[in-house]
Image (cartoon, rainbow over all chains, first blue to last red; front, side, top):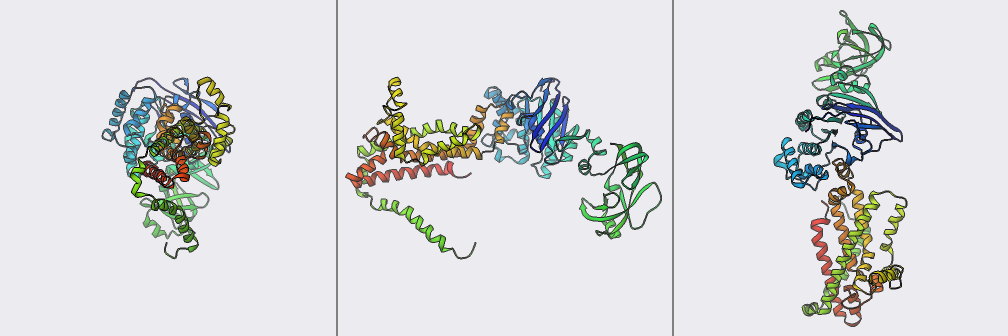
Length: 348
Length: 260
């Protein structure tokens, strides 16, 4: 791959009855941006708009400073990996990968040589002659990636690249995909609803909800300071909106002490594992303490996740032993506490 | 699914089966098996058979050449009046073949709207020629192909075509290298139906192309003619048609027509 600088600079607007997608997206050369969001948020529509598979109502797409939105899909220097890969069932893995170069005028022998090289790179050299139905999910995913890279795209688009795989394969394929994305020097946009895929694969997350960007930043930033309930749930934090006055934030009726001072409208976040539950009111140390009612109890990994209602709704992760000790049945009232040092506050 | 079979369904089902199979069995029972070999090698029989096979095959080729693009147009391109066009395409399916023959005569006959021009410009005459047989068969059989291929196109996953487009394939390349291979079972099934319909074509052929031995007398025409003069010959010819149909359907079924 050549070392030419690429930047994607796009403003995507797609209007449909009862839905509008309107997002601005910039991707630096070599950067991997993940569009993260719930189903129906418009992530895939955004990707399809970049590919030229849906018509934009307004906006523009510049790649390398050249307009992309005026070109039809087949004229764009893009490579796309689809959610269920869409390998052509009547062509071998090799001919699937050679398809793109052939369409762009590369002679057959040369196209096949390029394809063989790419299959080798994704570790499937000995599956070149296999038809897609003979490939496992993980192998098909890698062929799809090779096929997208074979056209030497300047913009790589991946739609839920790991969604069709089982948990074990996913782990393996994710690591491989990460390596290939790191080698790719063009811009990459990937769509996922899995926070782990996004965190592992992307340099930057762009969270899309209802057709608009609600938050963006590095995976670490987004994970530490979620700005919507969706993101908070995704990264496993309790999130509240309140008004801050120095180290204290008023959230509804509750005044919470936080680790860091802020002023004005602010978010407060803490992990469920930081919540401790007691039968009677605990004392000592700078803690946030409130009375809560148990709404429900469910398994969560090795621990138990308790759903609490009260002045603030919250999740608490505690050990199964603690559940038995506290006799946590739905409807029971307990005391919940979070240390101030575990509580993050940041401006809205 | 244990339990008694409902006789309200079973009795008509068996009657229907008997109704469909009995005539064919009759044909086999009454066949003059002893004289069959010499009957089959009579020049008129071979001539009619050859003519039938050639005309039905050429007509099917014409239908493929025109019908597949037509099906693509109906399935993939939205244009005003598409529903009307689709309805028009199926008219020959319900039209009595004799009427089709008359209509062909009016348009392609020597004094016809297009026929007169064809003859004066290219010196081509269609009615009462072998070419006329092909035209009549194609006219009657093409809807079978168009409907089958259009159905296959509508059922095909269009996202494969999108994937091809992102790889740089224009619409013609997408059609040739992705769409066509994907719908091939539908195309073959349509072609088989089309060929079978063309092989059995009678009404439009006799009206438009006439009944001349060697040039337009296909098997169905020969059967009809023989029934009046030599019923045994009619049975033999019918057996041949039956055998050809069964062989073609059976050989294609395993390879193409069966669901994957």
